[in-house]
Length: 245
Image (tube, rainbow, N blue to C red; front, side, top):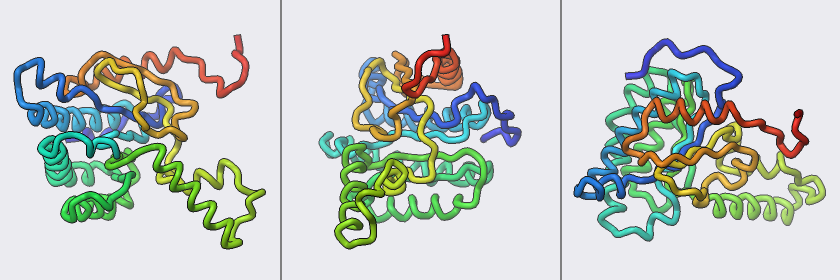
Protein backbone atom coordinates (compact mmCIF):
# COMPACT_ATOMS: atom_id res chain seq x y z
CA UNK A 1 0.00 0.00 0.00
CA UNK A 2 1.21 3.51 -0.76
CA UNK A 3 2.05 5.80 2.11
CA UNK A 4 -0.57 8.52 2.30
CA UNK A 5 2.12 11.03 3.30
CA UNK A 6 3.85 11.98 0.08
CA UNK A 7 7.31 13.54 0.15
CA UNK A 8 7.43 17.29 -0.42
CA UNK A 9 8.66 18.34 -3.85
CA UNK A 10 12.41 18.64 -4.27
CA UNK A 11 13.48 20.68 -7.32
CA UNK A 12 16.45 18.34 -7.74
CA UNK A 13 14.06 15.39 -8.11
CA UNK A 14 13.02 14.57 -11.68
CA UNK A 15 9.41 15.47 -12.23
CA UNK A 16 8.89 12.69 -14.77
CA UNK A 17 10.73 9.35 -14.68
CA UNK A 18 10.32 6.91 -17.58
CA UNK A 19 11.53 3.33 -17.32
CA UNK A 20 12.30 0.69 -19.93
CA UNK A 21 11.67 -2.43 -17.88
CA UNK A 22 14.08 -5.06 -19.16
CA UNK A 23 15.52 -8.32 -17.90
CA UNK A 24 12.57 -10.46 -16.81
CA UNK A 25 13.61 -13.33 -19.07
CA UNK A 26 17.26 -13.24 -18.05
CA UNK A 27 16.28 -13.09 -14.39
CA UNK A 28 14.23 -16.27 -14.81
CA UNK A 29 16.86 -18.03 -16.93
CA UNK A 30 19.57 -17.37 -14.33
CA UNK A 31 17.37 -19.15 -11.77
CA UNK A 32 16.27 -21.97 -14.12
CA UNK A 33 12.69 -20.77 -13.91
CA UNK A 34 10.06 -20.28 -16.64
CA UNK A 35 9.99 -16.83 -18.26
CA UNK A 36 6.46 -16.41 -16.92
CA UNK A 37 7.88 -16.37 -13.40
CA UNK A 38 10.27 -13.60 -14.41
CA UNK A 39 7.38 -11.56 -15.79
CA UNK A 40 5.41 -12.14 -12.56
CA UNK A 41 8.35 -10.87 -10.49
CA UNK A 42 8.56 -7.95 -12.91
CA UNK A 43 4.96 -7.06 -12.07
CA UNK A 44 5.94 -7.03 -8.40
CA UNK A 45 8.74 -4.60 -9.28
CA UNK A 46 6.17 -2.31 -10.88
CA UNK A 47 4.27 -2.12 -7.59
CA UNK A 48 7.48 -1.34 -5.66
CA UNK A 49 8.49 1.35 -8.14
CA UNK A 50 5.10 3.07 -8.07
CA UNK A 51 5.34 3.24 -4.28
CA UNK A 52 8.91 4.52 -4.46
CA UNK A 53 8.01 7.31 -6.89
CA UNK A 54 5.15 8.32 -4.63
CA UNK A 55 7.47 8.43 -1.62
CA UNK A 56 10.31 10.25 -3.40
CA UNK A 57 8.15 13.04 -4.81
CA UNK A 58 8.19 12.05 -8.48
CA UNK A 59 5.09 13.48 -10.19
CA UNK A 60 4.89 11.22 -13.24
CA UNK A 61 6.09 7.67 -13.92
CA UNK A 62 5.93 6.14 -17.40
CA UNK A 63 6.51 2.40 -17.77
CA UNK A 64 7.26 0.66 -21.07
CA UNK A 65 5.16 -2.45 -20.51
CA UNK A 66 4.75 -3.84 -24.05
CA UNK A 67 6.16 -2.42 -27.26
CA UNK A 68 4.56 -2.66 -30.69
CA UNK A 69 7.47 -4.95 -31.61
CA UNK A 70 6.80 -7.34 -28.73
CA UNK A 71 4.09 -9.05 -30.79
CA UNK A 72 7.00 -10.83 -32.53
CA UNK A 73 7.66 -12.82 -29.35
CA UNK A 74 6.32 -16.39 -28.97
CA UNK A 75 2.56 -16.56 -28.60
CA UNK A 76 2.74 -18.09 -25.14
CA UNK A 77 5.00 -15.29 -23.87
CA UNK A 78 2.71 -12.61 -25.31
CA UNK A 79 -0.19 -14.36 -23.59
CA UNK A 80 1.74 -14.37 -20.29
CA UNK A 81 2.48 -10.64 -20.58
CA UNK A 82 -1.12 -9.80 -21.32
CA UNK A 83 -2.23 -11.98 -18.43
CA UNK A 84 0.05 -10.05 -16.09
CA UNK A 85 -1.40 -6.77 -17.33
CA UNK A 86 -4.85 -8.08 -16.47
CA UNK A 87 -3.63 -9.22 -13.07
CA UNK A 88 -1.95 -5.91 -12.29
CA UNK A 89 -5.01 -3.84 -13.16
CA UNK A 90 -7.35 -6.07 -11.17
CA UNK A 91 -5.00 -6.43 -8.20
CA UNK A 92 -3.68 -2.88 -7.91
CA UNK A 93 -6.43 -0.55 -9.13
CA UNK A 94 -8.20 -0.17 -5.78
CA UNK A 95 -4.93 0.71 -4.04
CA UNK A 96 -3.84 3.09 -6.81
CA UNK A 97 -7.17 4.90 -6.70
CA UNK A 98 -7.26 5.06 -2.91
CA UNK A 99 -3.84 6.75 -2.92
CA UNK A 100 -4.69 9.33 -5.57
CA UNK A 101 -2.74 7.82 -8.47
CA UNK A 102 -4.05 8.77 -11.92
CA UNK A 103 -3.61 6.03 -14.51
CA UNK A 104 -3.20 6.74 -18.20
CA UNK A 105 -2.32 4.41 -21.09
CA UNK A 106 -0.54 5.19 -24.34
CA UNK A 107 -0.27 2.89 -27.34
CA UNK A 108 -2.69 1.36 -29.80
CA UNK A 109 -5.57 -0.68 -28.42
CA UNK A 110 -6.75 -2.26 -31.67
CA UNK A 111 -4.77 -5.51 -31.16
CA UNK A 112 -5.59 -5.90 -27.47
CA UNK A 113 -8.26 -8.31 -26.25
CA UNK A 114 -11.59 -6.72 -25.45
CA UNK A 115 -11.42 -7.47 -21.73
CA UNK A 116 -8.02 -5.76 -21.49
CA UNK A 117 -9.37 -2.70 -23.28
CA UNK A 118 -12.26 -2.68 -20.80
CA UNK A 119 -9.85 -2.85 -17.84
CA UNK A 120 -7.74 -0.04 -19.31
CA UNK A 121 -10.79 2.16 -19.85
CA UNK A 122 -12.05 1.38 -16.36
CA UNK A 123 -8.67 2.29 -14.80
CA UNK A 124 -8.45 5.58 -16.70
CA UNK A 125 -12.05 6.56 -15.98
CA UNK A 126 -11.99 5.65 -12.31
CA UNK A 127 -8.76 7.54 -11.59
CA UNK A 128 -9.25 10.49 -13.96
CA UNK A 129 -9.89 13.00 -11.18
CA UNK A 130 -7.01 11.91 -8.95
CA UNK A 131 -4.33 14.51 -8.31
CA UNK A 132 -1.42 12.38 -7.10
CA UNK A 133 1.21 10.49 -9.09
CA UNK A 134 0.45 10.17 -12.79
CA UNK A 135 1.17 6.58 -13.84
CA UNK A 136 1.49 6.24 -17.61
CA UNK A 137 1.63 2.69 -18.97
CA UNK A 138 2.81 2.16 -22.55
CA UNK A 139 1.16 -0.93 -24.06
CA UNK A 140 1.47 -1.78 -27.76
CA UNK A 141 3.42 1.46 -28.02
CA UNK A 142 6.08 2.50 -30.51
CA UNK A 143 7.69 5.93 -30.76
CA UNK A 144 8.03 5.88 -34.55
CA UNK A 145 4.38 4.88 -35.02
CA UNK A 146 3.34 7.69 -32.68
CA UNK A 147 5.32 10.26 -34.69
CA UNK A 148 3.92 8.96 -37.98
CA UNK A 149 0.36 9.13 -36.63
CA UNK A 150 0.86 12.71 -35.43
CA UNK A 151 2.32 13.69 -38.81
CA UNK A 152 -0.60 12.11 -40.62
CA UNK A 153 -3.09 13.93 -38.38
CA UNK A 154 -1.47 17.29 -39.12
CA UNK A 155 -1.20 16.51 -42.85
CA UNK A 156 -4.90 15.64 -43.02
CA UNK A 157 -5.80 18.82 -41.14
CA UNK A 158 -3.67 20.89 -43.53
CA UNK A 159 -5.18 19.21 -46.60
CA UNK A 160 -8.66 19.96 -45.28
CA UNK A 161 -7.76 23.61 -44.69
CA UNK A 162 -8.09 23.41 -40.94
CA UNK A 163 -4.40 24.10 -40.35
CA UNK A 164 -2.02 26.47 -42.10
CA UNK A 165 1.14 24.43 -42.81
CA UNK A 166 3.24 27.54 -42.14
CA UNK A 167 1.87 27.62 -38.58
CA UNK A 168 2.83 24.06 -37.69
CA UNK A 169 5.43 24.18 -34.93
CA UNK A 170 6.63 21.91 -32.13
CA UNK A 171 3.66 22.80 -29.93
CA UNK A 172 1.21 21.89 -32.70
CA UNK A 173 3.00 18.60 -33.26
CA UNK A 174 3.12 17.74 -29.55
CA UNK A 175 -0.62 18.35 -29.31
CA UNK A 176 -1.09 15.42 -31.70
CA UNK A 177 1.05 12.99 -29.72
CA UNK A 178 -0.44 10.44 -27.35
CA UNK A 179 1.42 12.09 -24.49
CA UNK A 180 -0.18 15.50 -24.96
CA UNK A 181 -0.53 17.20 -21.59
CA UNK A 182 2.20 15.06 -20.01
CA UNK A 183 5.55 16.72 -19.27
CA UNK A 184 8.54 15.34 -21.15
CA UNK A 185 10.58 12.82 -19.15
CA UNK A 186 13.48 14.28 -17.20
CA UNK A 187 15.03 10.89 -16.50
CA UNK A 188 14.87 7.69 -18.55
CA UNK A 189 16.07 4.50 -16.87
CA UNK A 190 16.76 1.20 -18.60
CA UNK A 191 17.41 -1.90 -16.55
CA UNK A 192 19.39 -5.08 -17.41
CA UNK A 193 22.52 -3.42 -18.80
CA UNK A 194 21.23 -2.83 -22.34
CA UNK A 195 22.04 0.63 -23.68
CA UNK A 196 19.39 1.50 -26.23
CA UNK A 197 15.97 3.16 -26.11
CA UNK A 198 14.05 0.61 -28.20
CA UNK A 199 11.60 2.98 -29.88
CA UNK A 200 10.46 4.50 -26.58
CA UNK A 201 9.31 8.13 -26.33
CA UNK A 202 11.55 9.18 -29.24
CA UNK A 203 10.18 12.73 -29.45
CA UNK A 204 9.59 13.26 -25.75
CA UNK A 205 13.01 12.10 -24.54
CA UNK A 206 14.98 14.54 -26.70
CA UNK A 207 16.54 16.23 -23.66
CA UNK A 208 16.07 13.55 -21.02
CA UNK A 209 18.95 12.28 -18.93
CA UNK A 210 19.56 8.54 -19.41
CA UNK A 211 20.69 6.12 -16.72
CA UNK A 212 21.48 2.52 -17.65
CA UNK A 213 21.70 0.02 -14.81
CA UNK A 214 22.79 -3.62 -14.82
CA UNK A 215 20.03 -4.49 -12.34
CA UNK A 216 17.46 -6.82 -13.89
CA UNK A 217 13.94 -5.46 -13.69
CA UNK A 218 12.54 -8.07 -11.22
CA UNK A 219 15.24 -6.98 -8.74
CA UNK A 220 14.62 -3.25 -9.18
CA UNK A 221 13.51 -1.41 -6.05
CA UNK A 222 13.47 1.91 -4.26
CA UNK A 223 17.23 1.89 -3.63
CA UNK A 224 17.92 1.55 -7.36
CA UNK A 225 15.54 4.39 -8.17
CA UNK A 226 17.30 6.51 -5.54
CA UNK A 227 20.66 5.67 -7.14
CA UNK A 228 19.38 6.75 -10.57
CA UNK A 229 17.99 9.99 -9.14
CA UNK A 230 21.32 10.64 -7.39
CA UNK A 231 23.08 10.28 -10.74
CA UNK A 232 20.48 12.54 -12.35
CA UNK A 233 21.30 15.24 -9.80
CA UNK A 234 24.94 15.18 -10.88
CA UNK A 235 24.06 15.99 -14.48
CA UNK A 236 24.08 19.52 -15.90
CA UNK A 237 21.02 19.91 -18.09
CA UNK A 238 21.82 22.50 -20.76
CA UNK A 239 19.12 21.88 -23.38
CA UNK A 240 21.58 22.77 -26.13
CA UNK A 241 23.03 25.84 -24.40
CA UNK A 242 26.63 26.25 -23.24
CA UNK A 243 27.74 25.00 -19.86
CA UNK A 244 27.57 27.51 -17.04
CA UNK A 245 31.08 26.50 -15.97
